[in-house]
Length: 65
Image (cartoon, rainbow, N blue to C red; front, side, top):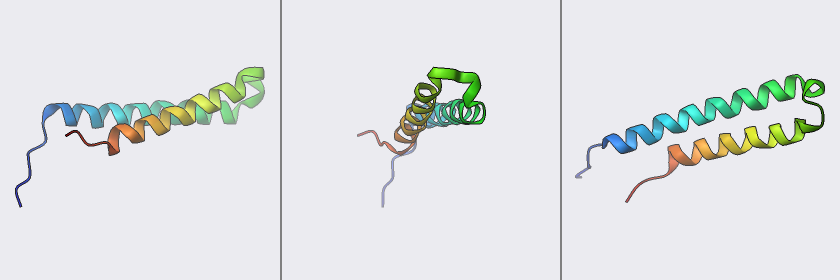
């Protein structure tokens, strides 16, 4: 049962993942709430918000070897 301690790189990766998820959530919510204000780019910004959320989740879940 030997576990390697978390290195600083893993901690920074998880923190960046949370920041990316927060940014994606803000982009998604603000665009969805004001879809008329975004105009023709609303679908683009919603898709980018979802992509940021997925990217943040990958940062959090991924393990380094």
